[in-house]
Image 1 (cartoon, rainbow, N blue to C red):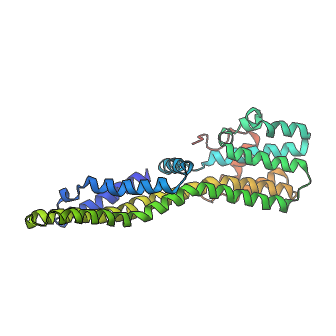
Image 2 (image 1 turned 30 degrees about the horizontal axis):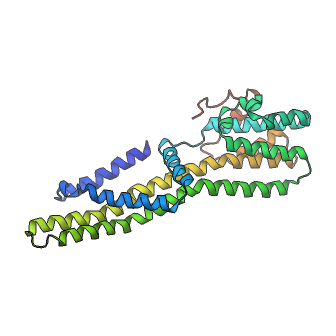
Image 3 (image 1 turned 180 degrees about the vertical axis):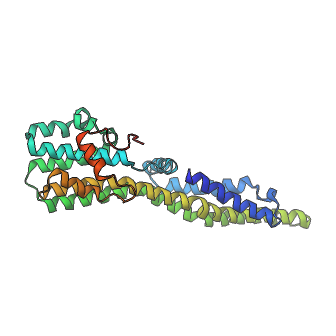
Length: 292
């Protein structure tokens, strides 16, 4: 919603200001200038990136528009799964634990946390490191280094589409100049026309420069900033898992280990201690019930 409000506000101020200072709106109606700039930008974007990145960019923009960031339910589900696994690590046999991590889709622990189970990458991350804990011969600092490396890899993969969109946005001003030059070439072909006609063609050419700058700084740049913010918040779930499991490996009881993970959440999004305790007593039923 913020994106739509901001876009309407931007368009309203730019167009409104232009009209208020006596500009003619019809001069800005240059669809072919937009075709040149948008088409060249998208074409370069496709040439510069793999199809997987192109598709992920579309997904990332959709996540930005819907503000698809973890909510309280996501955090509580993640902490709830970790608590149940750590509790079972202390009280149950290796075979019982392996039944959960080998087939999480059939595990009662993961079934109580649908937001975790729906996130296949996060589920695999949890299962992989619980499996390493079960093996028992890995030291906590070694696990921490491995977690850091994997989290960095996940973040790098998630940010590929962001970086590709930034590059495209940075190119729009230069592409706008290309569109303007093509417009000037067209205008020079009508050099014998009356000043009114020639002036209109030159004005239309200059719209290309304006469109390139506008698309770059007023459309693409805010959008990709939102993409980065959303993807960074999604990555926070892995940090929670990392800090919680490391605390457990270093000797903390499950209840205390959860605090290590909970404290990595931003203060204005962090579930309360009471909500986490309720989640431990009633997995999947505490806190915000909306798994948005």
